[in-house]
Image (cartoon, rainbow, N blue to C red; front, top):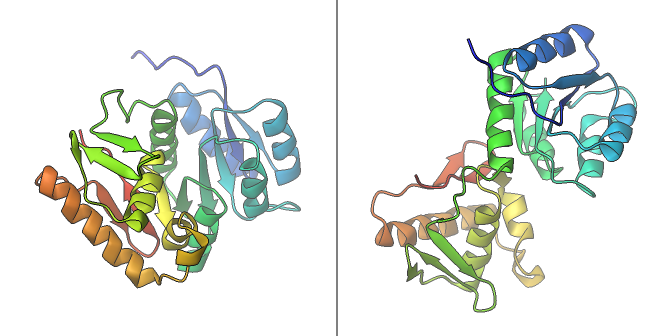
Length: 230
């Protein structure tokens, strides 16, 4: 059986449990992905700064510098895809991971195949294969407007900023707090439930141009994700 070509940059597994780290390395390598492991956040961060990886699988609970701190530090200099592993299942912990800059998360115990699938999905998005050159939308930042299939959407300024942020990172889950952060300072008093209403309006306006298009997906307990239409 032919395997995919090995990436020139490795996937970094940052996990302090040697058995879990070895398991993930084995599954990633079987899929043709070069991979290496680090057992603590500080050494991993040093490696990421020196040689940026293709993606990072990052455990939340690490000795010394924890996963949240590593994620926040990485986001100050790199947009590398980060999939966070967490044994915590509370909504607040998932939100903390996403708010720190993670692109996705997987709760322990997990299937190694699921982790690998999430990593490969993030690699595809990072390579831009999900957003083709002929994307169905056009963004005019100067005029605060977005066209869908060649037709300008009747967006309010708040809706423009929300949709603009979702379009900028297809496939990434944004918490409601992150969507609020993309608004002007004077609009940040908008409630979480108001965000839900604005998302409904965005869906309705897109579907008025392209019936049946359901490209803004709700992620239960977290927020929303933009999935480019095929």
